[in-house]
Amino acid sequence: MAKHRIYTTSFASVYPHYIAKAEKKGRTKAEVDQVISWLTGYGPKEFEAQLARKTDFETFFADAPKMNPSRALIKGVVCGVRVEDIEEPTMREIRYLDKLIDELARGKAMDKILREN
Image (cartoon, rainbow, N blue to C red):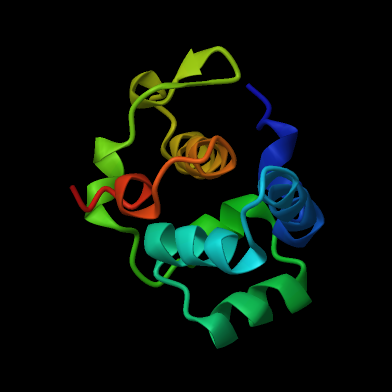
């Protein structure tokens, strides 16, 4: 079976869409960056380097410094699919990020998004 095209899509090409979605709902680029950092463990410099390299999604998640163990607490539906039911690990990570950005855009409190409570 062929890989989904999102795997070879540059993270940098989708990142502005994450920001736009959040900003349209009154959230900030800094909050988007905080969510990405929480999920992947990328610091600001490492993250900027990934964007500059135009790293694809598969590599972006494979190279992540420390995927947050609390990401398993992310539940719900993204694109009609329950994230907790996705078996392919990379696709699950991508959908976790999609779900976090959706929650941010919906106005959910940051501590709830970052699964601190």
